[in-house]
Length: 568
Ligand code: C2E
Ligand code: MG
Ligand code: MG
Image 1 (spheres, rainbow, N blue to C red):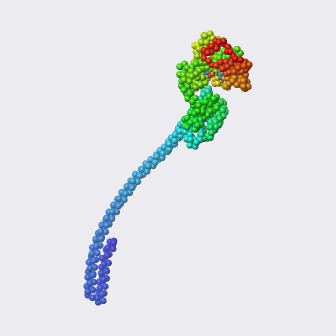
Image 2: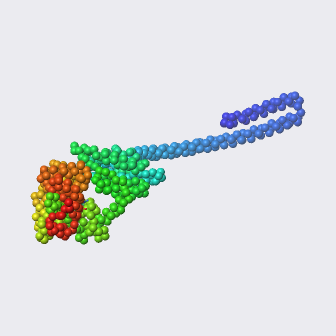
């Protein structure tokens, strides 16, 4: 109730009372009882009291309202304060969060940059990892899988083949004469040749096959799916054919061949290591078999490989222990039957295995480089023997010493030869060096001057096993060669095969026209002897005239009359 209403309140009540009093008077007038009149007066007195109470209440209410108004104002004030405080708090909060937002924004952008940087670094690390991984598993020169990756793939392929009960093939390939190309044409050409070989190998195998480079000029191939060993043979032949076409490098056509060894899972081995070893062993036999061919592994190759290993280790001490000995095989003048010379042939008196033929250890000595000290010993021993025979008053003969290409390439070969001639005091023409055709083919320039220097000393030169190599006529006329030794394979077949007879005849004519002596090796029968005499061959050597014998036995032959009694 507002103040105006409160003030009107007593007036309204008084008006009501007045209306009641007039109604009572009207009633008195209408002759109401005196009691009703008295009670009406009483009511009116009570009403007047009630009005006084109401006035009091209204005053009280008025006070209360003022208090409430005051309280309200106070509350209003308080609210304002707290709202302001609130606003201020919010405002300050706002300021703080604005700073934070800025900082956040800054942090955020830093974070973005850092993330991008991290991403870039991760990418770099990833690509470096990929590169490293590639480097670790591939050969840098050819990009082919390397030894490690091959080992992995082979092991996996073996597991698959084992589960599926299938065969797989491992091929070990080694280039023939690569070292010579590298030495004579330079490493740059050698490297390009290896790349060209790698490409051809990749081109001629199946997608599922793996071609890897083991190092140097060695390649290892995995054919994980073969039906039969013949499949591997076909692949090997395909590779040899692919490699045979000339490789054009630095505008030079380079010819190269390879030797391949093949091993088969499960026949030759159950694990990668064994299969690789077997293929390697078989490759070695392919090399021995004249190169440019392939060989499957056979069990007895292993036995031979073990023997080879033991030979190599004991070969090192054989010189010190004086286990080598020279045997001499007579060379006979075919017209007179006179012994005109002898070939010194080395043997090894092995403490456990008896007298070993050079076929069993000379190739090993050549591979290990031991042929050089051994060769020097042979040369000195042969020259010493010549002087002993001469001092014993025996008729002089020329002694031939086999000289392998490796010995000849030693820088001190000539110097050593001179020193031995000096030391043993023999006339140089009593010494002849037997060289193989391959020596002439290698680096013709330097070989030519070395051979000339040897000839200038007075030492004779012979070409051994003539006809099996590739020497051309121009080489033969260019080098100071005294003697051609026709290879025993032609002599052996000359009486049964007209082609071989023709070759023997051609070599004899050629030698004569070049002013060289011609000697037939491996004469075993009177027929061969007769044919050679008829062809005017100069000399002969072979079991028919005499086997290689110890020095004393040859001395006896020489003493016996200089002439071998040739059975007719
Ligand atoms: P080579 O120089 O061609 O020697 C001839 C080989 O044929 C010798 O074998 C000889 O015993 C054998 N032979 C001789 N006449 C006959 C015959 O009528 N029939 C048959 N079937 N064979 C005959 P050997 O002594 O076993 O020597 C084998 C090879 O070992 C030699 O072949 C030679 O290349 C090499 N060699 C021998 N001694 C030396 C050496 O001191 N140094 C080097 N580097 N190699 C040597
Ligand atoms: Mg010989
Ligand atoms: Mg020979």
